[in-house]
Length: 389
Picture 1 (tube, one colour):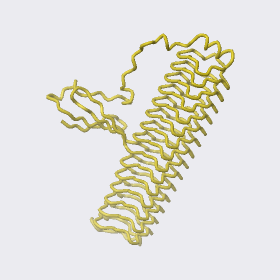
Picture 2 (cartoon, one colour; picture 1 turned 45 degrees about the horizontal axis):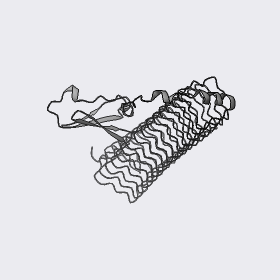
Picture 3 (tube, one colour; picture 1 turned 120 degrees about the vertical axis):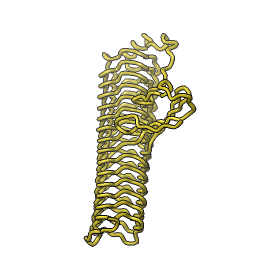
Picture 4 (cartoon, helix red, strand yellow; picture 1 turned 180 degrees about the vertical axis):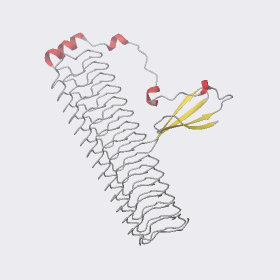
């Protein structure tokens, strides 16, 4: 039995159910979670008492601000002043640090799993290799924080300030970064699978070589960002319920994002949705956009040299002045697209529906144009084609 269906209203998650079932009953159908990552069962609450904060460690921290390796699990530290504190390698799992000042603190390899850090000041703090899984960092200040190789999986960083922070090589799987400020931050080679960047500010951020599979970047601001070799392809997960396995396919979405002047050389957007995206003057050389949705997007003056645009939907998009030298647009969809003044030298433009597209003053020298529907197309000389009408 194989069943393909769309499950979420935002159109990002599809499921394919397969397996042997005698009856396709409701009991056999797995329920889709809002975040499939949170479907994992909680760890057993064994040895709970050993996880509690050590009273002597609490006193030491309050008196000296020096408590490396201390056990402060589940402690309430809201009244503590921890500016410049040394908590290297300490256990703060489940602790409450809401609104605490940890500016310039030493938090290297500190465990903050499940901790409440809402509104906490962590500016210029050193959090290298810290564990922040499922922590609450909403509205926190992490400006210029050192977060190299940090684990922020499933953390809440909505509306947090991460500007100028260093996140190279970190993992943020399923993390909430909605409305967060990551301008001028460095997340090179980070794992950002299924992360939400809705309305996030990533202006001039370094996101090169990052893994964005299944990521939601709708309405994100990425002007001038470095996204070289970034991966925006879909992510998948298989969940078994009874005798039925369901494979979830999570599509990367960048609808309404601003990528003006962004560096996207070699980035992979295969099957991603980029509806109404601003890619003006973006560098997309050698980018992979096969089967992507680029409907009603602005690619004016963009550099798409040698880009793979096979089967890409570019309906009603603005490609005026774009460089498409040696690009592959085989079976792309160009209905109502604007290619005025575009450079299409040696470009593959075969088997395309380009009804009513505008090629005024476009350069089609040595371009391959076989098998196209050119009804209503405005040709480079200004004449209207009737071919295919």
